[in-house]
Image (cartoon, rainbow, N blue to C red; front, side, top):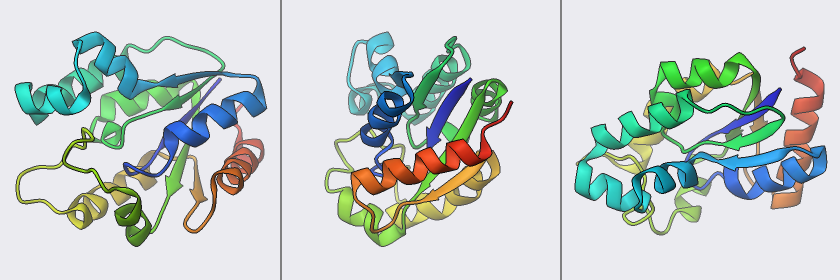
Length: 168
């Protein structure tokens, strides 16, 4: 079984994911890195050169085609835009939503324009936060309320959520 981490950009999915994987003796996969490797360019370059829709299609292909076991998977914040990808990930996985308050997301995201964040023209960070929140809640099996927590506290909270709610 896999553990899938979802949440806003800046929520710490990659940072805490590595530590959760270490603590559980699991592999770690960062899907943003897989997308970059597949396309041969950075996330922001893919968005700038090919557009948001092409980026989202690539993300869906990478996530839907992921074949792994016993892995912690850190997804990009936009993964929840693809029902197909989320269903594929959750087939053999337990999904944890790393939730932060909007204020904390804003504090953490200083480089939103260069970071490869899926944000349409005219949208604000609040817009995508409000748009994605119901999707994160729809696809998660557990919510890790990580606002105001440091990395170690967040890891502990996620480990607790996984141990309490693990499927199978």
